[in-house]
Length: 287
Image (cartoon, rainbow, N blue to C red; front, side):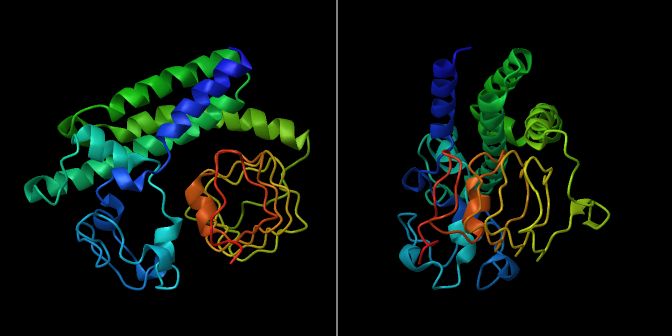
């Protein structure tokens, strides 16, 4: 596969995974549980509309979310699942006009978000994988996953997401190993995994500015409030890493792998932070 075909394939897929709130029915403002401990002023039950959600599904305080204590809203990203459920699964029929199907819509949204998240990581794996055989496997599972996103509501709810995710993770792990090994160039890991929380590397509040993290395995790592200022994270696998309030000002993440917009949104960065081309610099970073 030529680089041109690969780039076109990647761009088309990524476009479908970009959030288009104007085509959604405010699913994230209704379906999700809000926690006061995760960037919200108060707790909100799943299935209950946010007080700021208007009849046209727009947010009444959208321009002042962070000032209103709704930092969690600015960090969230559904990977384009909202518009997919609204416009494809339900053909433009919203939950407000058919409250009986509301609960089902919320459940479908949660399933779709997981499928779209998998597609995000698979698109990254497809882009960086140089092994033609593995790349073909990735392409096949991308096609399979896209087909799943086009199922009807009842079928989506019945999906065995665990089994599908396991198949996806196998290919992501293969790709990660190749990229990280190349980035580390034979160097041993600089981190000890002795201190872990529920199997996740515990680096909460750690000063990592002098640690060599190129090609590091940071999958699922707890990097909450960690100091990564000016750190080179080239080739580091950040899938599932918790970057809430992590200081990534001046850090180089341009060649990090499996990092998503929601992770970037939750971190503290600025104009000197280098990001992958697929991600957008949060508007509030330099304020």
